[in-house]
Length: 348
Image (cartoon, rainbow, N blue to C red):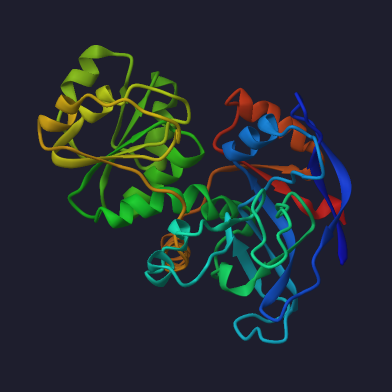
């Protein structure tokens, strides 16, 4: 086994991570070893740390959107060489044989994809440990060359937040003439605005207050609609072809469905728990409700190329990894605009 340093959740009942030595597997023939340089801090990480029991032999090391450099390649690897800049997201393996995998949608693998952390390795059954660490060993098929011109720190969140909103925007055919609304201007939402605008759409932001109006316009949005203002919401009824709902807490979808134009779609990508929908909110206007989660390999590669061509990266606050607990505490308070990224070099 190889060893590296990383940040492990203590649990239970605490969100504290501490620096520890971690084991990584020796390279399999189709593996690459990546020196992790930058790793984004996702709400999923916070939820995982909160929920971690800390019991038994199961370790939790978060982190599933990262960039770095290849330091070693397995004997069968031809796509990468030592020194290549790469990016890795929240999926590191899949069965490769089911209908979804064959369609390039490994994120929907019928056997469930292997997640970057908290997943089960398909070969040895071990629990995957994430990229809040200095090294990650990954199957080469699930790593992506980082296109030239993308800042590696600001590009790291593209591998989770970016692909999560790219998938519905691209699948729903967003482009010139499309009217897009983005609910929630956080880690996912700000990238949804940037990508929608880069695709040629007209974008608006739906937010609980007007505090982020200047940010919304800076990101390229046409306007900001205050969701707590009944008059503004009524004035936006049936206005948008696509509504991307990135709100990460349980909420009523009705007010947002009423913003969707006839035959339009609300894509619900923020909160993954149960929702209740009134059929009439779908019936009136033949509206569609959809969701998306992460993306397959072809879509992820296409998104990175698109972002490089159009200069799209996340708005980040870069912190040394030693401040990871501060980042999680502030993320819990929504005190970030718009994504924390950890600089892992202090683990060397």
